[in-house]
Length: 236
Length: 371
Image (cartoon, each protein chain N blue to C red):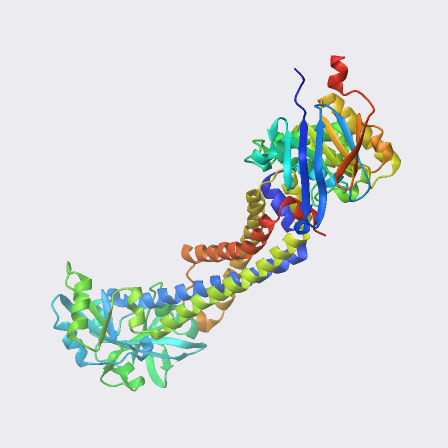
């Protein structure tokens, strides 16, 4: 029996401004466990809206979203879902400027039965994973754009989610920093069997994904498979 | 990183704003503490008048605006003495006059025989003799301030006295005042035949409260002061001070809460996107609310500590004024500090209410989209 998709989006629409703006219009999408999917499209096509709905930052007007086999609409505690089951990286790193890199990584861990010391240890470990072991006590304004985005990735991994969502993670970075971030995402996907969904309008970023989903005017208008998913590769 | 250190970093990211908000609350708390300490001290000094000469209680004119204005006819004493349970009485008159640098020298007129029956603890000299209208006893602080000792002459309210003894009771009011013959003080006060109060000593084993009530029923003009809480029957000033104290607390809470609310609203508005990020990484609305309320509480706690320290310093400063020093001993009761802390907590909660409400009403996306 084939494994259930990590993410299953069915007939999802999202309407804003009392129905005048239809950002998503009947979107269907499956993402397999361990798959690296890039969602591409021009500005305003609805790709970020779709990502936000999968992250449970917003609710669909119609349709359903299943993550890990559970319908988000039926989940009693979306805070718990956002904290433990999904990690999100924004285009702007959105780090808290008064906190050090290590403290930023610890923020999602509050309320998850971790002591201050355990939070600190976990943050140091994750900063090591993203290559910032020596910058743990540096505050965001003193970090480069690429370093800040690495801290944001470490923060997204704080509670070991199975799904990592990234909204234009290289959008504000130079090409070299951007490629390093992508390499990091690919490595994390392989090492941690993460399912990764990246929203981008940059073809170079999309080229790194297993599959590219193309969106236009709130709909999926195309799909390109570039590589086998790890699960498919293992079974073939 | 602990939750508290996160809160502290949020709070002091704008140190000048936090300092000014803190200062605003601290000034209110300073007033609450200073006024509270002074009022309590004043009450205690008044309590000392009540038990002067180890009396069980005293009787004064009901409804007097101030105890020093209490006027009872001398005949009241015999009416009181006739009540069941009264062992003896001691009529007294108060007169406040200037003595040296002290404008509130408290001169108590008593019969020399009554002074002999309940003598103040002498540190020098002797008690007033019977039939010696010009002899005076001084409290040790008054004697030191006036630079006199037993045997020295002393002019008080244009009357020439001879100091015959110096006593120490430990009560500011008494130790900065003096005691003289009842008739002499009546003359000085231009109130012949009048008394301020009548001290009452009850028969041992008798219920003081019942005797006091019986006196009030039998003598319509009389108000029995058994407890400090009875004081407002004969001293409207007490009511005024307490009302003033309450008004200042209300103003301190109101002004402080507006200051805190302003600071917290600004802080929350500036951090709207950050609050969105916190929600996006799994913080519940309740945890965000707890963060904002804790920030507000921390701000007010720092203000309470600073305000209390300033309040104590203000009282100590005021106590250096001789006139005040002679009048009261500051009373640093736990109640006052609890009240200051209570004011700080109320200010914090009221000040945090709106910004916290606004923060938890926002959805994660609304907060993240905020520019």
